[in-house]
Image 1 (cartoon, rainbow, N blue to C red):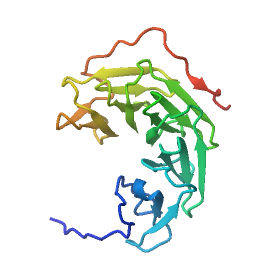
Image 2 (image 1 turned 90 degrees about the horizontal axis):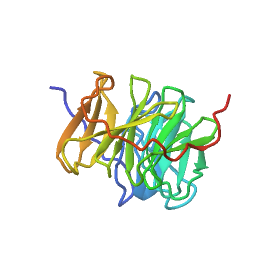
Image 3 (image 1 turned 135 degrees about the horizontal axis):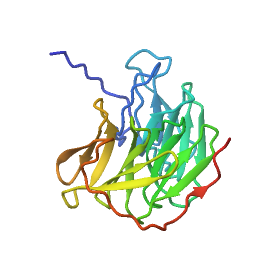
Image 4 (image 1 turned 180 degrees about the vertical axis):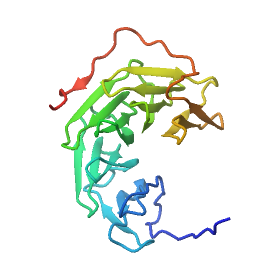
Length: 237
């Protein structure tokens, strides 16, 4: 059994540790929503922590992922924006077109863009490295898209906390959803496993779920044939 080394992180009082991401040249990237800062360890010894304050208080950074441009991209539900930080700490922020979207999860897609959920506006968003944003409305309102992950099948998968389902969206905007067998299980986090399947947490059901990306065993939810059209600019050439 390998030994365990523990370090006390120099986070401010009341600062919650929310996410952990392993990156080249950046051993730790931890979101600290209540402190409104993004820690980083680029060009610093292992275990040393630097923090980069965001522009305004209350931006509440939540989820973070690496991007195709060697930067980190993160969601700011408090500011209704997507943020970008370079390895040397330069921060850019991009407001979302829809008011009160409340962006949550974020993941790099197979198309070299960043895909994210919007919990309150019930949309899946996509942001290009240039900062251009497109948004796709989900067919069921108030379904609560939460966490999102890229999969080996070329699509993005996401949890639908309020609809008790797992959603799937292709890079062309086609959407499917799969109902979970236990009512009100509250699916939350999701990630792609080494077996090619999607693994997710069921907060209220006290379970870990797994759905195959290619052979879907869960029942498919029937969406109305007509629904809100994608909202946003056309894709850049």
